[in-house]
Figure 1 (spheres, helix red, strand yellow):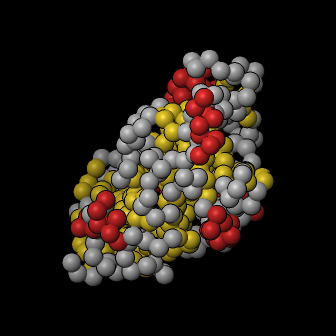
Figure 2 (figure 1 turned 180 degrees about the vertical axis):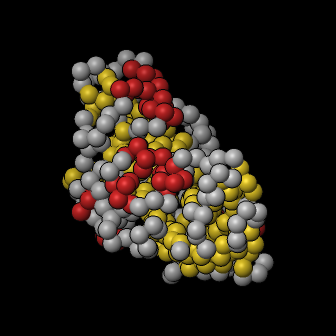
Figure 3 (figure 1 turned 90 degrees about the vertical axis):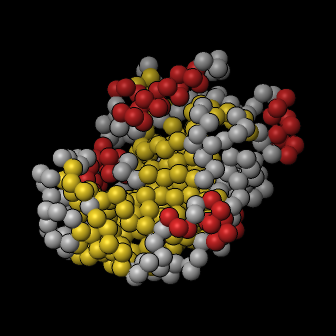
Amino acid sequence: MGAQTVVKWQSVPQLPGAVQDLVGMDSSLRKDVVATEGVVDLVEAWVSDSVMDNNRQYLSGGWGKIGKRLNRYWQYMTPVKQKYVATISREYKIYDGLGEEVDMNIFVMPHLPEYMSMVRKGFNRSFEQGRSEKHYRYDNPPYPCPEELRFQELGFLTVECEGTLHADYRDALSELFIPTAEGKHHLEDHGNFGVVYPTFGLYGAWVMDCNHNCRPEIHPIDWMWWLDLSEDRPGSPRAKSWIIGLVRDGSERFDTWSPAPLAGEIAIPVALPPDAQRVTITVEPLVHSPLDAAALAEKLNPSNYAENPTGFRLEGAGRDAVEIEIKRDGMPDTGWGMALEGFVRDESTGFLMGQLRFGVATPELFTGRVTVDFE
């Protein structure tokens, strides 16, 4: 395959409304959590081990034996891992547990119908377990909360999403990806967010945590992604800069749900207004363990990706071709791949939309930044 690959687009009657938010200014998204969730929901993610064989997982070691006697466990609500898009509803927290275990706790509330239904059904199943409702998580963040998630007089249902960070990478992750120090954090003070209440996309096991009241959770998190809406994020005013992370759970208690090596793919939306003529897509690593070329070949099939692409050319009816330059700023030579595909053109507005598919395999984690800029 040559350095520049030609990608054809097809015409469609209408693209999703979130496409225009995606090519708009970040300032609009900073003020509108519903619009931001719509944009973040355009991302798709999955892992090769998306189907979970064991329906329960227990604490590791001696604690696990005690937990089994006390009927404490995590149980999946679906055997296939799930995507969840929502906005943070309480301060982001790091819990530094026993030994080297460091837990990342993200409490998020959705506004899109699909995820509101997911949350309500999850809590209904939790309540059926007959454990106390007293310690469930209710919050009242300072943005419109959907009435569909109101619970009695206690507030609104929100879901905890959790994963255990790898101790060896904590300092680097804290600087370049997300805070890792014990305690609560104001994410607007970190350079990768830019807002007090950021919206997260998350993908992982959708479970009941029956160590704690059988409440619904995404646990462990495999993929996480969000938009960097900070003033100093890279690119022009209309660019969109995504922070992405594929992270294997570091607690070693989810060895069948989060096995090593972990291989997954994320599809980042590429949306262009009618006047866009040139596009630059920059892919750069942040913090990562050594990538695994053998696992990529086994689990994701490198033939699905372009070979050493430096650029693409979009062609189709209705407008001039668009040149796309690919910059791989510091990316390793192997263990990952990308493809640009699925482009369609809105017949009424002239907007274009497709996907940058990015696949990676790693024994522990890969975090990075994908910036889509155009002129």
